[in-house]
Length: 300
Image (cartoon, rainbow, N blue to C red; front, side):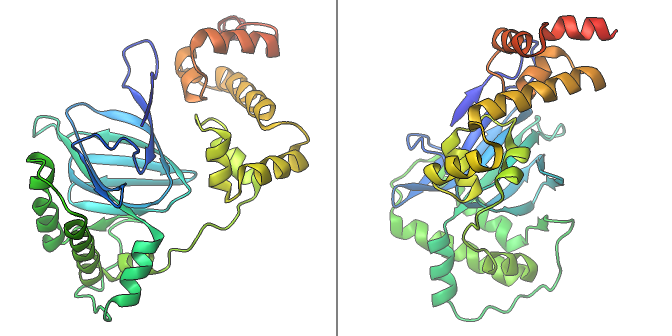
């Protein structure tokens, strides 16, 4: 998990989280075959950040609500609702606690590897859903009573921190997939239609993610390419290096935001993925021949 400060005016901490989380020492992570499969998050303060998904995940909200955005898609997932998020995406989130319950926010993230889904579908008898209902809202599904009970059955694994065996977790994951199939036909269909990543257009990837704090390796993975192929394809499209293109794109966007919004300079800086204000101010001046603060003052 990576952390980066959002700004210097007391705003919420901005996080960049890679899922699955690699920190195996956390008591809020259950591991299967050395990889996290279920991750628990409990907050007492609102939080904003970015999730980079290396695997498909189910996000289940047990208390509070979370706002998600990816490209032009926006979801609001409330208590006892869930959504399926596909791997190879970068999603902006804002987690909001329940003000009527101590401002608590509680979620479970269940990591769904391709091999796990494939094995379940290949070895399971045909599931007939009890409900034919689709999503409550686009991309958002209601948790059935059985699924809520299932999430409660996981609490001792986190709270008491007992020895958890791989066989137990496999049974739990299988139970959850059965509950999804029986309880919601549209969501189960989404699971069955998951496919390996297809290479995306370089321009689409870069336009969506140029402001994200992602490494070239991560951008390559999002595009469905190896790092070497990504660099070759990028050079063919833009005829410059990725680092130079990203810096120029961010600085042009910063100039546009200074002209068209009232956002503080610090917020523009961190929104566009710059490391800190001094770095942002220095390279903005090199590119536009004046600091961002001076540029905005002249506009006024």
